[in-house]
Length: 386
Image 1 (cartoon, rainbow, N blue to C red):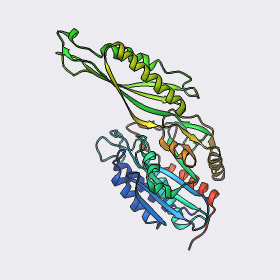
Image 2 (tube, rainbow, N blue to C red):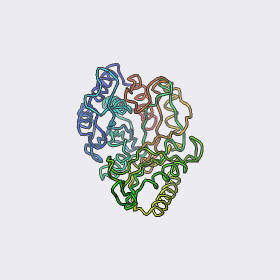
Image 3 (cartoon, one colour):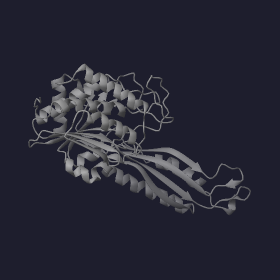
């Protein structure tokens, strides 16, 4: 395998540079520019920018017929203030790479170095740096972009770092790997009144008092399993912050989470019916908005077998893990290819993802790169280049 210590050192330096310049979903222009400049040095056969917004696709073409194998990383950071103190900590107030996407990008830059020197024997390798994963909008935008049709991947692979799993160990399973989820914003509208005469208004307070426990009570099933249904109230506001006004408007934000898309659709219908009934009983108008919509992510059996074989060849410890309650928009690639994602252990004592002092372990860069390069080699072969 044509990786050198210099490759890993340069990827680590680049990862730390990205860590210091986080950009949130839909705003990743500088990150995309830095990525494009980095991979352009490897002289790919094609470099696509602006894919699905700010996405970058890098293509290494053998020139011979064969499958197209895509490896994906994410461009975006989170709207979280970093509290850790590495020398390369975030320089952007209120934003940080608290999910490790900086590390995922660094892994793909190692692949770029490798395939820049050694094209596959057959087919194509595509490195995709995807925007807006955290909001669930990025994969859909990439796939809808006409340029994506030209890529036409046969296989799509991705990884996510995973604290609590031993460093460098892997969880990988067939079938559902991540839950479906979406944010439901409920708006209740009545009529404000003077606080001395609340009877002249229509307050949403009784409806809010009923809906918060009632919606939460729709949760059922084991904490993780095929029957999982989970509703979490994340935000609530009633009226104005004033003592002289009886409220006439309220918002309730709820996250809906299920193991499959079919179960999600049924849950949406139940939740909306409950809100409509309670609002009607209380004389309120109501409206629904959905945000951060994620489909469930399902690993294809053949793609999983390919990854397992690559891990065995590289001596990577792997086991069948559980599906995660967290969501991941990589699942959309399963509709256009055989796809699979694995979870790469970030250490048992590492802070959790989205924790304000999380920092991707640099030791994972060569491990992730080795798995992906071996996967590509198993599917496409290798060809030395002068």
